[in-house]
Length: 260
Length: 288
Image (cartoon, rainbow over all chains, first blue to last red; front, side, top):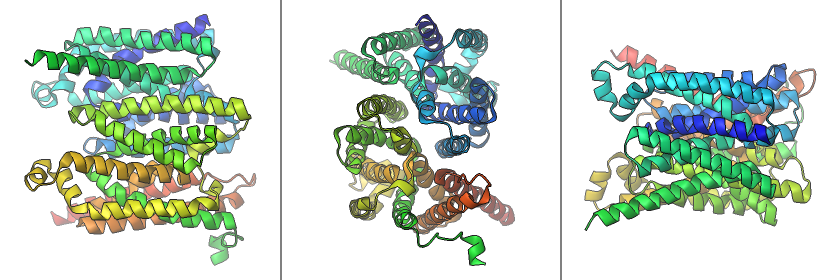
């Protein structure tokens, strides 16, 4: 149980931060496709007998770099094709290895109560590295995300930042998939940050609020799952959606009140 | 020669027969709807609706209703929510689709948990997620074909105002078309088509056949009619060739483990996309 809280907390911190860029850059489809690529990687790793975490990170990086390489102009189509390729590869790996079904459930929907101490330590190291990278690229990435042309004209390496962004999404996917599952890693990366962005305009505050909302979502989901015995994925999805809907209602109420 | 290409029993197998018939119908509808999806840049919604429809399928198996009804209901409700989320500002479309998708994935997890704890049936997750043309009962054919025909009919009727409002909403509004109504109508058509294909061929192939053939055809064809017909032909070819490859692969390996249909069809679709990109590059290079 302590491991579950720790792992969930680490995942929430990272997802909140990455998610803010996902929302600002309209990258929700990539953020959905990459964790699914990670799922194929874990299935492949079980087939060849290496660590699933290695497979997760390798495949989500491959998905991210593929989208970055081919997806300059038709981002949504390339992302969709990358996604189906990964899922089909995952299905083929599972058919070849004959892995049984609970393993798929765990990868797709998460198994937070089954996290080991070693996995928590690995997560912690990845979070530290992640924080360093984010601190380095936060300002230029924000600039490139909000006004791409202006940033490019002022000499910001927009293409390189695009790759850095997708790699960050990929690393988050590798971290979060074993904990909350492929389908709900995504809910956590979009719901809380989108809610934060509706409520506050300044990037620093939005980052803080996104992290806070994401932590609230994960903690509440772990507690609810523990008390009810229902799958954690349901609570993550439901609370993330509830945060977004509430924030949207609050922001439209505020807009209406501002207008006389 | 033909025996070398097609392993014995391919044509006489009733399961393969149902798969071939439904595969053709679903591939044609997906490809036709997909051309508009690619033009409008709505691949994300097209994919998200498969997951939303799956929540309905899981819910239907919980209450014992027909899975097709569950898929269709959830698809229509999800399509309406996606449209409502992105209605005020186009900027919100991406995030709104994402939130609907996340919530639907959560519901799927919950329903599957209830299904597996109440009936101890195994294999439900896999069939709901990955689908398989080889597991579709023939009883789905009549309703499935009816839904497919209705989808194609509505698409055919609204094709002109729909394309005009996709390419230039201002021009469409000036000519009396209501872009909001058009995009709601199109999302409902998309939801019906995706729900049907997600049930029959699974979520993976639903997205692959929606986006891949349409994208390939749009790169090669010179008109939208040509692109639509080309996409339909490419999608049908991918499904039939994929089923054939998957069936044959059972005889290739010593272990007699066949490659899943989804992997075979996606492989064919990727080849089509690569060929169309190479073709359009070659043509552009020669034109210079």
